[in-house]
Image 1: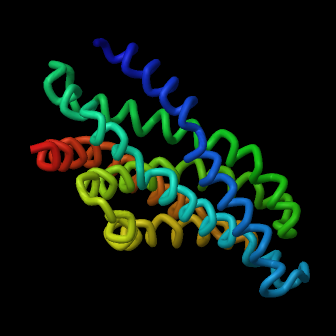
Image 2: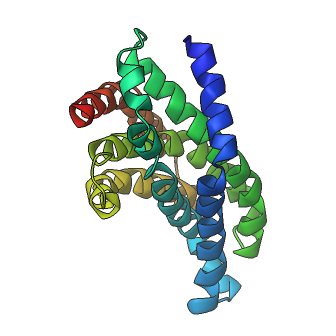
Length: 220
């Protein structure tokens, strides 16, 4: 097995089990659509909070998509094969997370402009919303990967995983919504974007190593 063959295998596996990604995207759509119906559909209310609504929906959708990232591989013994394959497990994990991120975020980014208009997000803030999603969501997936690996051997580990990773999601959501709000108010937002990038880069370094350690502990 090579890294490229593993990448192809992950793409095919995700294509044949695409229902998980579809469910996460449907959840995103339902949250964004139902929020204004349940609170206040007026433009005066939705316009200032549109970025926060979309970001919270995206974060919860990521939780749903990563919860079972390693579950099937653990049950069918694939994780054990990855450990003894001779390839770097952190690199394999990084490839797997990258495939999940691409499969989830590409349709989500395509849907975002539509829902931004529905929530009356100012048109000049759409670019900032997309920029924060591109900078922040890799961190969400990488952090979620650690939680999924920690609970992969538990039968009912979904709630525990949520409790473990949600506190680490809060800074990403806060900095993302703060950057969007700062742009709407004409305030500097470069610092918030830099912090988002820094969190994702830190997660890029830490997550593959931590995830591999958790997987090895779970398989043993």
